[in-house]
Amino acid sequence: MAIHAGVNMEFIRCEDKSFAAGLERAAQLGYDYVEPMVHNGRELLSEAGYFHSFSMDDDPLEMLDLLRKNGLKASGLSAHCPLMRPEISVPYLQKAIRFAAAIGAPVVNTDEGIRPEWVPLDEAWGVMRYTLKTALRTAERYGIYIGIEPHQSITTTTEGLLRVAQLVESPMLRVNYDTGNAFLGGEDPYAGLTAVLPLLVHVHAKDISIQHAEKEKGLVTGTPVGCACGDGVIDWARVLGILRDANWSGVLSVECGTPEQALRSRVHLDALIGQTASV
Image (tube, rainbow, N blue to C red; front, side, top):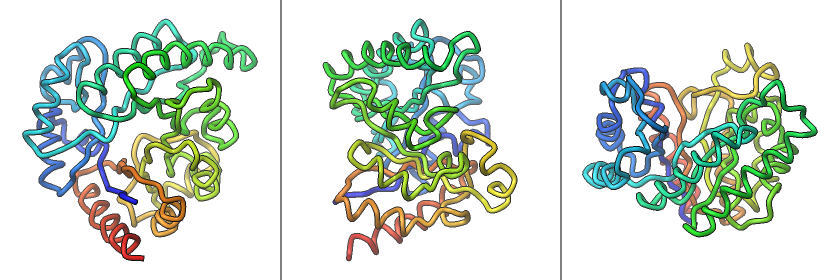
């Protein structure tokens, strides 16, 4: 079993830094894995060096060069899109899959997105199946997983997450489990993690502060970032125990709001991973 702590690039957003600066900081904080965020076209803040997202209109090998320069690997790509908007999501996911293959990222992480008001729930399943089935044709060719994350109205529940992650029969359709989103949505994150283990390909290590939990638990379907792992309500020793018992290998990609939280998260998780490995 090989479990590693990685970091989602959201940790650098608070400092208005570029993607390259974020990679340099992640390496300085002791991480070996990062989860870049990608977008289509040109985006003003990214172009000016004030935002960490990377355009898929740029050369993926440029990203790979930057990763290698800092001694980093990509645990996956953050490529969230509305599955119920195939005119947007099909070409976006196809491009993200090809991009992931070029940089050596094994999974493209996404969620169902916000359901458009003109799409009834009973129609949403067929639309999402079409989007996923089309994107998975590309995923299967390139050997890249699509990881469905618990986020938004359907996938926040374990039942909904598993239904979306099994809409298409494909070895490349998997789950990127987000502990914090599941918790805020009112789910038991440990029971949810256990339920999705057969499909688990990537984990968002998101902790939720006690204050945040008291304010929003059961009222939201997710949150962009959490607090430092170990400072909140998630029992990371229990999470790692579940993964260890399943002989799972992969990356716990920390989703927090500041570099200082990212550092404390790595120290906390690395200590627990070391303890788990010695069991």
